[in-house]
Image 1 (cartoon, rainbow, N blue to C red):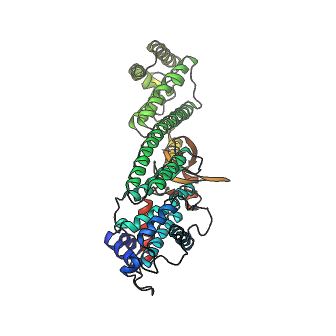
Image 2 (cartoon, helix red, strand yellow):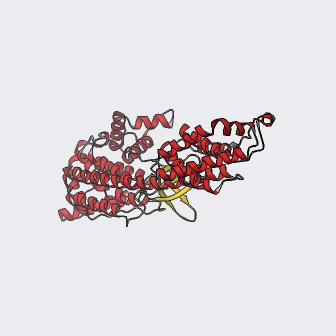
Image 3 (cartoon, helix red, strand yellow):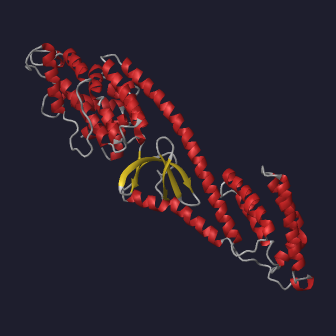
Amino acid sequence: MSSETDTGKAAKDPERVAEVIKKFINGDGDGQGKATTAQATEGKQFHDRREIIKALTQLQVTYKSEYTPGQAVNINTDDFKFALLNSMAKISNSAMTKSVNQVDGRTIDFVEMIFGAFLRDHNVSDVIKSLLLRLQIPMIKIAMLDKQFFQNNRHPARHVLDTIAHIGIGIDEKENPVYQTMNLIIDQLLNTFDQNIASFNTALASLSRLTKIESEKHEQKEAETQKQILKEHARQVVLTELQYQTKNKSIPASIKPLILKQWSSLMFNYFIRNGKDSDEWIEIVAQLRQLINGLQPITTKEQWEFHNNEADTFIETIKNRLYTTKQDKLSIDDSVNSLQAAYKKILTDTDFDDSTIESLNNETPDDTTVSITEENTAKDQIALLPEGVKQGVWFEIFNGDKPVRRLKLSIILLDEAKLIFVDRVGAKVMEKTAEEFNEELKTEKSRILADHSVFDHALGQVIASLIV
């Protein structure tokens, strides 16, 4: 193949898959010779296929294989074949004088290669790998009974494996109730599966129900989590904006309820509904700035013209804005009256008149530079994150000296360049700045988890490894 991408495409081609598997099982080109039809059925040297299926059915409830993290070999095909031969000898009450024919032996080898690929897939958690390993023998039986199994991407057995991996993407512990539920579903499958795939259909139906239940619980909890996070974030944004706009400014005590309570509530609602980049938010902040500037001693032509020509209209605008909230209108009226009185006092107390105001500077300093610079820096940090970093994506997250956590990115706070991660039940677990998380991804301390079809991924790897 010309590239890894081409190899991957060829591995997903049903005809190519069938061709590669046929060559592997028949031993074409490896010096072992082709398997014959007689070998695949019965003979003095080889066990009949029916004997193998019967022995596998007994083994599937007794043969234990569990994933051990860090262990070089978790699947020993020779040990398994020995256990299979021993089981068949016990069934026939005879010595182990026969062996498994080449077709069946290589079918076992191929399925074990698939499971080996499962175990190498870092997207699957260690505890879920142990669950998948429990289904080795049923998969071997299906591969022997159904020649089209590896080409049939709708087979329920494949979907059982994929669903287990999907549900378990955020599960790290066997004590997890969802893990234990899946374990019980697999127990039921192992105890009932003979040759009819009805057991897999039943297991898939149970897993699908579990998926729906867990998904609804997760979505509800995550929505609550997001709502709380956004509310707290909105409070902080409003507080920061109020502090920025009132810094070094004189605010009469009578006006503080309007700014710190009534107008801040209005800003909170605008931020929640529209966000910080919206025209609505920009306008509401501009009005706050104008409101506060109007409370300062007149030092510019612009201020003087505002108080003489625009103050009454502006005060009415403030009143109408506040009326759109659910706050008490009598309190709003009191605050607006206080504002009107404060503006009149500012104008009355000024030393400037028509003859001297023309000499005042008509320009006001740009007091938004710092705020804009900070926002641009945050956006730049977000832009540096890899393309795959999106809300809803699962990650293996670096957790300092503690074990890594499997968490989902739930919220990206663009104006603060913060990423909020939740667990599989939707509860907030961790937050990171975009800068630190980007560095962790570069150094592979943290990494993206692909919520893909584990079976297709494993099959593609095995097929690619066999293509010469």
